[in-house]
Length: 178
Image (spheres, rainbow, N blue to C red):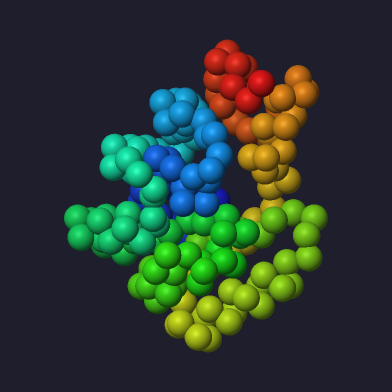
């Protein structure tokens, strides 16, 4: 997020936890209150960072296109959508994914220790087919995933360096992912 703000000269980056992802309706997810608290613990990293609970208050599955349409109508200026690389290469399969690709600037970053040539080719195909405006951040890939962090916590192992200190402290204090 910090790299996106700096590299793309973003005025604001809004963290917006979903009420429930359409892809996770069959799974137990960490509560919105806890996810917001973890986000709040990192807002001081960059003055452009802020939190919105818009999707949490909507309830029901959070479809990205509906949220993007909502904010596009009330914000002044260009809007970007920051997505993990694994998600970005699948945007064409999302609900109204073609509109996301044609109407919004996408920002993503590569995953570490993976051959991203196939993913980069997919992103190029989105540019060619949809005229998609996609920025792949010029940063070192971060070697951490939410699945890995949850597994390490479950095993009682440290996650220092994989998540910001405030997030780690919150997880441990509230005994999340045990």
